[in-house]
Image (tube, rainbow, N blue to C red; front, side, top):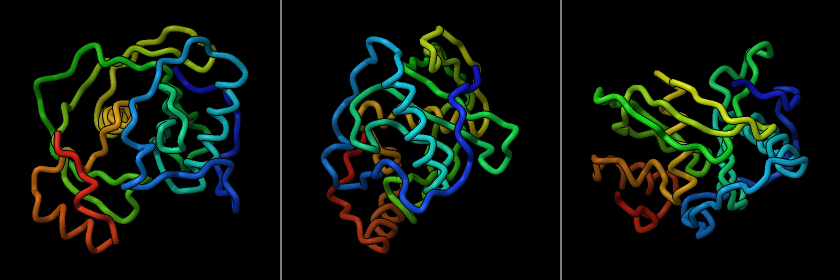
Length: 186
């Protein structure tokens, strides 16, 4: 369940990958399933983790760094070196709770913008780990939300597409110099 791709949880002056931002077309393209989990995928995972930690994030999906593969890295406890990150390859939500939770979300691809989004509180997700082994995880709270948020990226969906309060959404986007036209409501 936890990543064995060892990297130090620290900020790098020059992270290996560039995070694309709202308005970049690359964020809207659906990701392809990973055919085989190999050394190249593990290297991508390492670089994604280094980039995520450098940007003070807790999750990063491959499309955010311009790679159209179904790969997600997560670490809801980035300050704790003892807590390993989680790697999800080809994730699929198997079930979700009927309980809906509304919480504020942000995104490394939309820096500075934080808005409320409705999501199921609990999910069961199946995926392959960084060695290609099948895994299943029942996620709650922040981890559940982070997985759903990152899985949206695999389908070209950003959290702002799910924001219901359009007035707050437009104000926040304009304030941070993003075009409200880049939002594609779902």
